View (cartoon, rainbow, N blue to C red):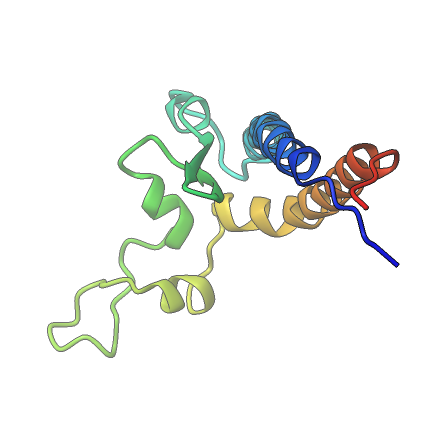
Length: 151
């Protein structure tokens, strides 16, 4: 019994798949960023005064080697206050000088967060984005390997 293995076909297929995968992921990340940004702008809990906070909400993605990272951020300096608290007179009891010093955990759980939009948007849209990503992977795998034979 003998086994014949087409190594050239495998290498060509893997290179082709990597290129297609990279293109598909870039397109999917771009589409997901538009969804995140659109949802955040549409569902912002604050009233626009100058429209700067809404207009400067931006979603983007970056690729680090083989890792894709989506991010949603405020473009205005006071965005951190919209996300953390709406009570400028609040005093941090745990701080030695009694000043309002925010930590991520405190901002997440200890404050009212009445005007927050970043975290709620990510919580709301991430299941949808991950479901779409799984669907993309399934389609790519099925289309790439359904008719290929390496053995």
